[in-house]
Image (cartoon, rainbow, N blue to C red):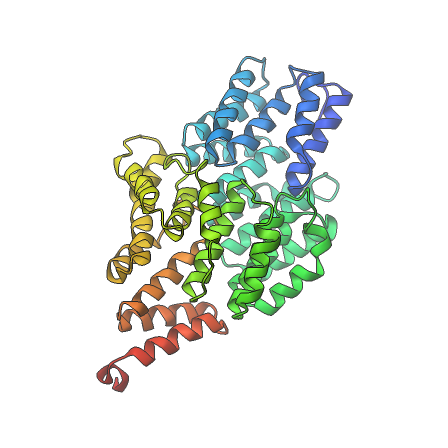
Length: 445
């Protein structure tokens, strides 16, 4: 039986399609090129090649978009009609759970899978992304740590595994080791967008805005190609650095340029766009009619069911565009959602107060916003992205306390933020405004 580059058996493959599969996996690993197109080429030659179908199902299932999820279910139906090895059947079982909205169960299934198949890089990366989408910082690190001793530079893809470990280390606050691992991964594979973005996250979390801009500029040729799936997200990281330095004009130039000029319909790109416009609004900058274009783009994705993290960002755009009815439609979906899947619980228990808080903030009801967001900010290890992405919750909460006259709470939150990023101009501004707003008794204290 033919094997992939990491030595895993490939049922239904010959030399030609095994080579196409390896190319597809490498494209997936570095988020560059066309892994779906390469998998399709392999399937056209060998329709019974199970791992090509499985790779496609993972790619569509992890897109967090309603239509992509439907496509993944259809692909999984094809997979189940094939004769599968134990490894392939294990992939199919995990995909079944994922596409049923059971993200934690799917991620756990792939944990067990990789204990038996430590060199299955497709399962490692798919599981790592499931950990990311459900915000499980510990498993972002430990999923990779459990298998890392089995890898070396002699195994193709070792750099990719190091890059994933770098991100897990960053999300668990081990910033020095994270940066070291990310830089090591990039020494081995300069095109690894995930490793590059792991180092960018380190600089964001440490408040190293100038370093972050330098990092992005110096490595720009490696991550800005048109075939790079992660280019918009990396531009977003650079924009955050400029925003922290108060350089709003540069942020808007990046938004109108590489972040939004192509009007991307990819959910990840639209999440970044919503989050950036919301941050600009928090800092008092008029973003004009940019909300309207983005809100229209969200219409094909925001269903209140598939992935609440995306729906929350769609609501930001709907609020900004003056489409309160669509924001309420998403809220109604969360309130009425009676499904038993984990993704339904995310909507009811976590996304609902989060979106209510953002809606209250936009409507000027700052006390309600503060109440909702003070609890909703504890979504870490529940669902939704990275610490850097979720920071918009704390930023909005702090701004709500300032605008709502909750000066004691505002000062406390500003001190909390400064303890993590003491050199951030934004955080220093929060503390200055809170103390300026304090009444005489508070100032004396």
